[in-house]
Amino acid sequence: MLYNTRQSYTPALEPYELNERALIIDTETVGVGPTVEIVEIALGDCSGKIVYHSLVRPLFNKLPRSTVEQRFEPEEFAAAPEWSEVWTEVAPLVDNKLLVAYNASFDRRALSAMRERYRQPANERGWRCAMQLVKRAAGSKRNLTLADACALYNLAGGNHRADVDVIATCQLLRAVSSRLA
Image 1 (cartoon, helix red, strand yellow):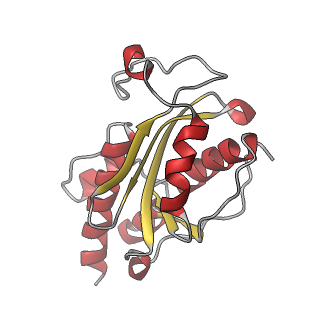
Image 2 (cartoon, rainbow, N blue to C red):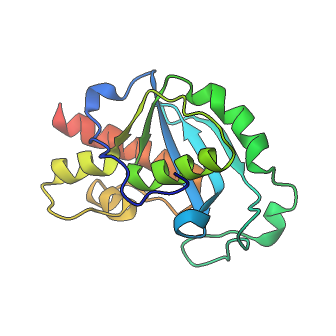
């Protein structure tokens, strides 16, 4: 399974699960479906500290283009490592950790596709979706973008760069958790 649009259900994060055994993850990608590639990955702990951040040089897709939302410059990728190098650093960090992503189904599919392509084992404890927790807390029937959800709590939203989105997700989860407590 390189890419499966119907990954098994990723449950909503429960506030008590946001602890030292969890990491917040965000990825930025290029390509679609089976050709998806991660071009940036960031991991943060629950205090909001980035514990890992790297660009990833895509091998099968064109470099991402800079947009108003996503500011990638081609020269940033000149020295970027390939996925196999990135995974050797990421694997020990996610080992037996609960991975929390704002839109977990998206990041889970992208990470799964990359690991499958390179025949790398899954070693995380599981996944939780922050967006589903926020949706429930806000009483919304629709999924909110990270920027929209942050705006509800008067927080700066993400900017489609993995490290900034991890920090925004962490701040958002703290705000939601404090209101639910």
